[in-house]
Image (cartoon, rainbow, N blue to C red):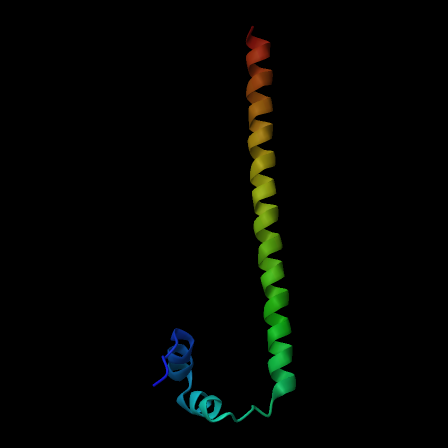
Amino acid sequence: MRPIRASEIGSYLYCRRAWWYHLKGVEPENQSELVAGTQLHQTHGRSILAAGLLRTLGLILFLASLVILVAYCTAKLI
């Protein structure tokens, strides 16, 4: 008896027929669509990563400008 993996459970819950086909070794006929979907997800993932990095950079620049503003205002008071 072989162990059941978590990914198999997810696949079964998503589509029982696809899980059964995979278990029997039947390859999907829509390979080009699957490849296109994988590429789309990779492109989207890179976009999300870039957006996160830009947000972090914006926050760092905002905090740096805030520190400079406080230093400037403090210097004017002295």
